[in-house]
Length: 300
Image 1 (cartoon, rainbow, N blue to C red):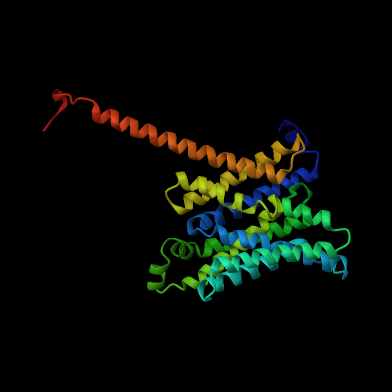
Image 2 (tube, rainbow, N blue to C red; image 1 turned 90 degrees about the vertical axis):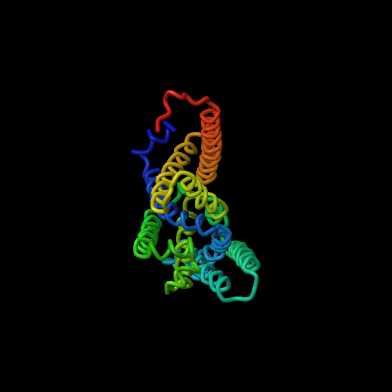
């Protein structure tokens, strides 16, 4: 890791990668809290894999049709939002099984991505970078788009924090109080879709769910309120992405995979810590109960 910090001031691509990781951590920590609390990680998984079709389409129209202004993240945003809307409407209104629709969107998105890869000359390797993550190759223009998406996600959460909280914890009660729970649920899925797009730039399509859920799950083990869980999740995401980026640089490891492995290690360590802490408290309580009572200390 010392090599990374030594080269950081001298190489712009390392600075871009670090800034991207920190920007991604903001939305990831906040929306990941909702995803874990609402238990919609399987929906996020379907959305994350559908974005490959949008990215493939963006590469295709830029390379074949000459639309130079189209970026891969533009296609990813469009595909993610459409997928979120379809899944949300089916979940709320449709008669089809929700898991079947999610599987269909998952498979169709990936298949369209493969088709566009095959039909786009010279872009297969670059698109594979988005599939598995290549944060070291992000450009300043893509950082601007990431920052814009980040601001949109955080501003919306700040505006509708209490509504989202009601939808996550007691949706039926929220409806009884007159809250348009369906609308806020769809909005939450749209924010999840935008966060998925942000994460694709850092860890790739395949590993999005790990970074979206693991830091938030760790935060949930220690936080006792939603805003504290969000804050802790953001901090954990920032530390994990920064550590993974630095740890992968020297040995020339895939940055996205290293970040996700780091998140997994933190999650497992948190589970072990909680287990030992609970066992220690139980043992202490048992020892206190078994200790004989000193009658001289008993007062009325």
